[in-house]
Length: 218
Image 1 (tube, rainbow, N blue to C red):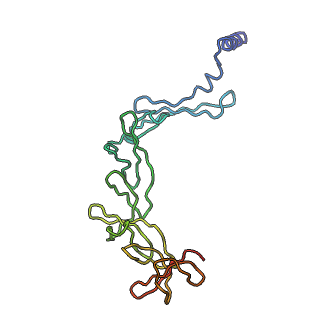
Image 2 (image 1 turned 60 degrees about the horizontal axis):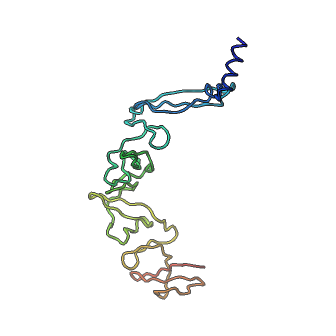
Image 3 (image 1 turned 45 degrees about the vertical axis):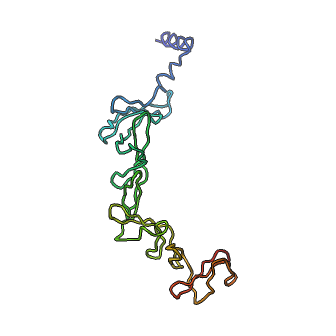
């Protein structure tokens, strides 16, 4: 038995093959139809062990492919055709990618509890549903709950995403339906350019007989 082991070892060294490497480290993932065969090596050699497992990707309506550089379960995304960058699946945005003429997708951003996934032409976004908002406002921005939000309309439904919380300031519509966070004051001299206000560089706005300051620098 000892002589047989020595002969095997000598043959592997002379042939340029590492016998122990092949039996301990030959551990690769690969696809077989829709099934992915996975392998993990927790150390190799005489002190480690190889663990193998298999999973049928079709259980999740996926396929097994190595198109991304390594075997894995991926969605075949028919929705990704015609330049679509992302789409919704429940409350998750799925990102699209084309490889060798086929379209694949994987989960991307998960929408928060108060958000829903909304599909627009070519892309999807996580948004907060509201009863109504002014989607025709400049850049879609409006004041809501003392926050600056961006408004969207899709198939007669309205949604918003938060841009800035005005906190101790006040969300005010200024000029051509633009909104900014301003500090309310008793009175100031309205200006189109920067002026000095209480040792600050800023601007004064008079809106509906009320005065506000937008401070740039203290």
